[in-house]
Length: 516
Image (cartoon, rainbow, N blue to C red):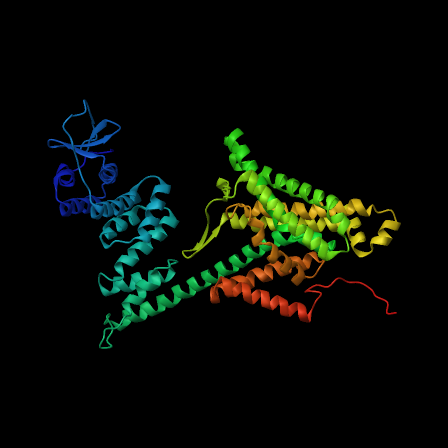
């Protein structure tokens, strides 16, 4: 410890009643004794002991005098533990958080200020005010001002209360409205609990400002949730937009290609953990091409061995791919087990950005949104600017003519199917970062993928993008209003009715026809 503590207060912590312990804790806080943090932590963790009249902090059989901080050797044999009940531990937690406001380390001060904001105690006001006079960091100072204002709202003279209420108008905390509303409560006889009309007016103005800010935060959170869900639907449907939209193949094993990409990510993760633990945070960079390659190879094998013989026969294709999907699910269950497996986020995808107190944007979702955008751009450039893309578009528009001018249609079919399957693998890689990976992973996305492709327009990449984002937004808005199940049903009914009126989807293929 940096300095000796008051022996009388330390004695109360060790030998006093629970009330005396709490009083001593409050006195240490009021005095701003940063050196008391190790002592209080030891009491909370059961490491404070007494030997006669001496108070010791004992960790790993090494004793330190709680008053002076001096080492005590040899370790006394006759010792008794100092017991702290839940009340005392709660007081210690608040005291340690408050005392850390005076720490020279910015990270400790910021963490302590955040903790105080979540659990404000009136007795902390003197310490908070003392910390405010010394704090130089603008972000921490802003938090402490809100803490002090929250404490002063219901105490002090009229002017200080009004000033505190106006300070809370800038608060981003979701608990602030409840605090301000409590001042506007009425008694059973209809009179206000707060008799001063000027204070009530200040509360009303601050409450309105806070509620508007929180409402905008909720809208921003809903917007982000819609974009996030839309990006996931887009990744899941993009591969299907190629295999079904461009090639006309109804592939019910598409969900299992997504699942293969997720398991490929899991395998790469385990390889990095076993052979390169120091580079674990980079495993996702290796998992992306691995997931694409694994699903693409399975897709090309599927096209060469089964689907090639079923072109133009949609019912047989549907039944065959459904059977293959069951085989793939059972194969994964046999090899990896029926239980879900856990794929960890790299450290740079953990946490999130806090817009306001009630809205946090997770990094893994943000990365997936950016990843989906990159995949869409890459697929668009491949189809529009490469030789393979030219061949795919040519075979899609007129297979006999493409074959007549030398396009290897059979090879193009295999490569296009492999491309769509590889994109499904990328979707699996992304989905592994937001949930568990299991044999039934793909089943949750196959119906949504077909809805996106059909709604956007068969064969239209831009239609797939618009449809995925639109359905993501609509789903989230309806979920907030009526729940997830009703939202799913409503979206499905809307698409059924929409396709009845516009079978070609949002974006129809452009072409020319000659009437006979």
